[in-house]
Image (cartoon, rainbow, N blue to C red):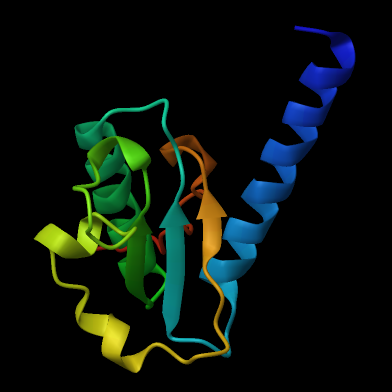
Length: 121
Protein backbone atom coordinates (compact mmCIF):
# COMPACT_ATOMS: atom_id res chain seq x y z
CA UNK A 1 0.00 0.00 0.00
CA UNK A 2 1.38 3.40 -0.90
CA UNK A 3 2.24 6.01 1.70
CA UNK A 4 -0.50 8.33 0.46
CA UNK A 5 -3.09 5.57 0.74
CA UNK A 6 -1.98 4.69 4.30
CA UNK A 7 -2.07 8.35 5.27
CA UNK A 8 -5.55 8.74 3.79
CA UNK A 9 -6.83 5.64 5.62
CA UNK A 10 -5.32 6.88 8.89
CA UNK A 11 -6.95 10.30 8.46
CA UNK A 12 -10.33 8.75 7.61
CA UNK A 13 -10.18 6.55 10.73
CA UNK A 14 -9.30 9.53 12.90
CA UNK A 15 -12.19 11.58 11.49
CA UNK A 16 -14.58 8.65 11.95
CA UNK A 17 -13.52 8.28 15.60
CA UNK A 18 -14.14 11.99 16.21
CA UNK A 19 -17.58 11.81 14.60
CA UNK A 20 -18.49 8.83 16.78
CA UNK A 21 -17.26 10.55 19.94
CA UNK A 22 -19.41 13.60 19.07
CA UNK A 23 -22.44 11.39 18.41
CA UNK A 24 -22.18 9.76 21.83
CA UNK A 25 -21.42 13.01 23.67
CA UNK A 26 -24.06 15.24 22.00
CA UNK A 27 -26.11 16.63 24.91
CA UNK A 28 -29.02 17.67 22.65
CA UNK A 29 -29.82 14.10 21.56
CA UNK A 30 -30.91 11.12 23.62
CA UNK A 31 -30.45 8.76 20.66
CA UNK A 32 -27.21 7.73 19.00
CA UNK A 33 -27.72 6.59 15.38
CA UNK A 34 -25.00 4.25 14.11
CA UNK A 35 -24.55 2.58 10.73
CA UNK A 36 -21.99 -0.19 10.31
CA UNK A 37 -20.69 -0.41 6.75
CA UNK A 38 -18.13 -3.14 6.31
CA UNK A 39 -17.46 -6.16 4.16
CA UNK A 40 -14.26 -7.16 5.90
CA UNK A 41 -15.51 -8.41 9.27
CA UNK A 42 -17.94 -11.25 9.89
CA UNK A 43 -21.50 -11.22 11.15
CA UNK A 44 -20.65 -12.06 14.76
CA UNK A 45 -17.89 -9.46 14.85
CA UNK A 46 -20.43 -6.89 13.70
CA UNK A 47 -22.92 -8.08 16.32
CA UNK A 48 -20.20 -7.85 18.98
CA UNK A 49 -19.63 -4.25 17.91
CA UNK A 50 -23.38 -3.64 18.30
CA UNK A 51 -23.34 -5.02 21.84
CA UNK A 52 -20.35 -2.85 22.70
CA UNK A 53 -21.99 0.21 21.11
CA UNK A 54 -25.20 -0.43 23.07
CA UNK A 55 -23.19 -0.71 26.30
CA UNK A 56 -21.35 2.55 25.62
CA UNK A 57 -24.61 4.28 24.65
CA UNK A 58 -26.17 3.17 27.93
CA UNK A 59 -23.20 4.54 29.86
CA UNK A 60 -23.64 7.88 28.09
CA UNK A 61 -27.39 7.81 28.80
CA UNK A 62 -28.32 7.35 25.15
CA UNK A 63 -30.56 4.92 23.31
CA UNK A 64 -28.89 3.28 20.29
CA UNK A 65 -30.35 2.84 16.83
CA UNK A 66 -28.10 0.62 14.76
CA UNK A 67 -28.10 -0.33 11.11
CA UNK A 68 -25.85 -2.97 9.59
CA UNK A 69 -25.67 -2.67 5.83
CA UNK A 70 -23.09 -5.23 4.76
CA UNK A 71 -23.90 -6.73 1.38
CA UNK A 72 -22.55 -10.08 2.62
CA UNK A 73 -25.65 -10.87 4.68
CA UNK A 74 -28.49 -9.48 2.58
CA UNK A 75 -31.22 -11.67 1.17
CA UNK A 76 -32.22 -10.78 -2.39
CA UNK A 77 -35.17 -8.42 -2.38
CA UNK A 78 -34.75 -7.47 1.27
CA UNK A 79 -33.97 -4.02 2.63
CA UNK A 80 -30.36 -2.87 2.85
CA UNK A 81 -30.29 -3.08 6.67
CA UNK A 82 -29.95 -6.77 7.51
CA UNK A 83 -29.87 -6.03 11.26
CA UNK A 84 -33.51 -4.89 11.30
CA UNK A 85 -34.52 -8.11 9.55
CA UNK A 86 -33.55 -10.09 12.65
CA UNK A 87 -33.65 -7.56 15.51
CA UNK A 88 -35.97 -4.77 16.67
CA UNK A 89 -34.58 -1.27 17.13
CA UNK A 90 -36.92 -0.01 19.85
CA UNK A 91 -35.65 3.56 19.65
CA UNK A 92 -36.07 3.71 15.87
CA UNK A 93 -39.65 4.97 16.21
CA UNK A 94 -38.31 7.98 18.17
CA UNK A 95 -35.57 8.68 15.64
CA UNK A 96 -35.79 12.29 14.43
CA UNK A 97 -35.75 12.59 10.62
CA UNK A 98 -32.88 15.09 10.72
CA UNK A 99 -30.51 12.75 12.62
CA UNK A 100 -28.22 11.21 10.01
CA UNK A 101 -26.42 8.01 10.96
CA UNK A 102 -22.81 8.11 12.05
CA UNK A 103 -20.90 5.71 9.80
CA UNK A 104 -18.61 3.03 11.26
CA UNK A 105 -16.43 0.52 9.48
CA UNK A 106 -15.35 -1.52 12.51
CA UNK A 107 -15.90 -1.70 16.26
CA UNK A 108 -12.45 -0.31 17.02
CA UNK A 109 -13.75 3.15 16.16
CA UNK A 110 -16.12 3.25 19.13
CA UNK A 111 -15.24 5.92 21.67
CA UNK A 112 -13.74 5.15 25.00
CA UNK A 113 -16.07 4.57 27.91
CA UNK A 114 -16.72 7.59 30.15
CA UNK A 115 -14.76 7.67 33.38
CA UNK A 116 -16.50 6.11 36.32
CA UNK A 117 -16.99 7.99 39.54
CA UNK A 118 -15.26 6.31 42.41
CA UNK A 119 -17.68 4.73 44.81
CA UNK A 120 -16.77 4.09 48.40
CA UNK A 121 -19.13 1.39 49.68
